[in-house]
Image (cartoon, rainbow, N blue to C red; front, top):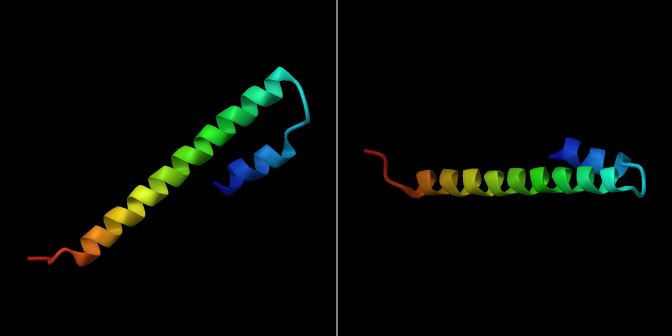
Length: 52
C-alpha cells in the first residue's frame, strides 16, 4: 500500500490520464486496506477460537 500512496503523490497534476491513474491507485489501495482488515479479523477470530 505504501507503493500506491507514493505513486499517487508522484502523479503529475491535471489531465484525464492522471485522474484515471489516481482513481486506479486509490481503488487498489482501498482493496489492499480491506484485505488487510479481513486478514486481521480472521487472525483475531482464529486466536480466540479454541483449537482441538
